[in-house]
Length: 168
Image 1 (tube, rainbow, N blue to C red):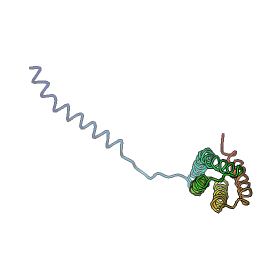
Image 2: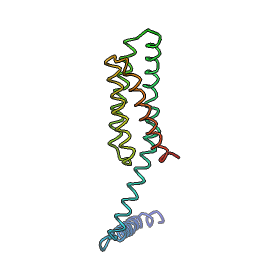
Image 3: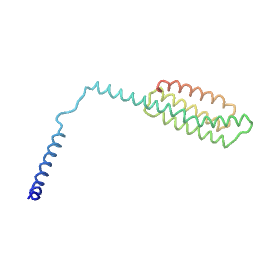
Image 4: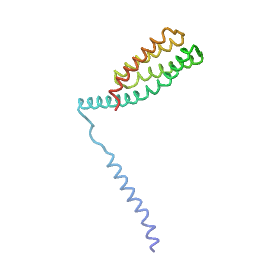
């Protein structure tokens, strides 16, 4: 008999459980009214969040720019060493130009990200400077190499100054 009673109770238990679940879901999901917040608080919150995102992006960008530029700077130094040894290497010059062009592309793309304006501007300046340096190497303008390198070093120093404000 216990077997029959437990089988008879199963549909009732299922109905009760279903009713409880439906009631719980429906009452828990009902929303009345309209969400609202003072416009000034919303604007301030959005502004704070934008600044936080910009600072986080600035930190990331500042840490990756120097690493990104390091490879092309090392290649450029090898190129200059070869020139100073009176042993110009066209393959090395091509490698330097390609690396510089990649730097320019990276810097221009980075300058369009959600970053503080001072960092965006310095990335654009650095991209222009690196582009000039690339053209100087590509045109084999030996006399212009020092001036282009000096401008690049100045641009990199200014970028480092800007980045100090965003790095821990």
